[in-house]
Image (cartoon, rainbow, N blue to C red; front, side, top):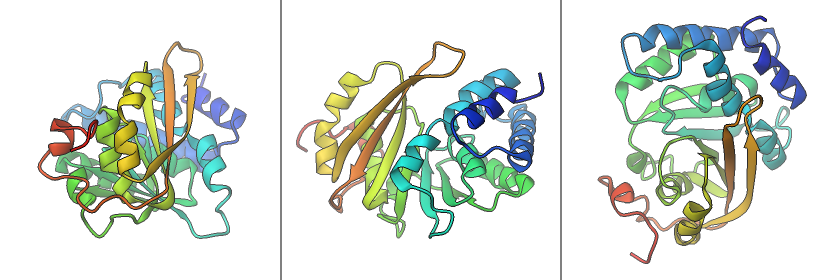
Length: 248
């Protein structure tokens, strides 16, 4: 079996673009990720089969959802998205590979990860991905506030915290699509106040299992209905220290 054949099959089955260009970029990114991971802590997952499932397939599994939300943008203005807390580039890099009609900002707080991504994007010749260094609290209070059609995040954080980071970046009428693993319903209930306060409305929850595994995943899909109050996101780590679960 050739490398990333399961990814190719998954994309074909789900109507996701996957040709020679995409295959070469996925291979190039994997090789560079493993090489750099020897000298810096990018990911604990390095075996090709595990990267294929847990990083590549998991990342692109949102594409059918994104196509439902935004339709076919090939002949229109590109969808402007941000991957907040992208880490080693997931889900933003795989999404940029298979969605050339989107423009993704890959945002992370650590310079070394952003430097890795800048080099990776250059190696892959991936023009629709732009790494950005900055804390989520700072980006949300910058001129990028409410400038994105879409915010995606696979960051490991409580949903209330993620919403304070993500929703201020999204335009009214845009969406946050948040990746979650395991049990999430209590977390979703706790986040209801933050969602309302920040102008969001729950549109849908999609639960699924990664193919050929017992790994349960979910997408929390939130529509931005109203502007977020200008005080959010709060600064200096306050969102994670004091999540918006009750009236502040």
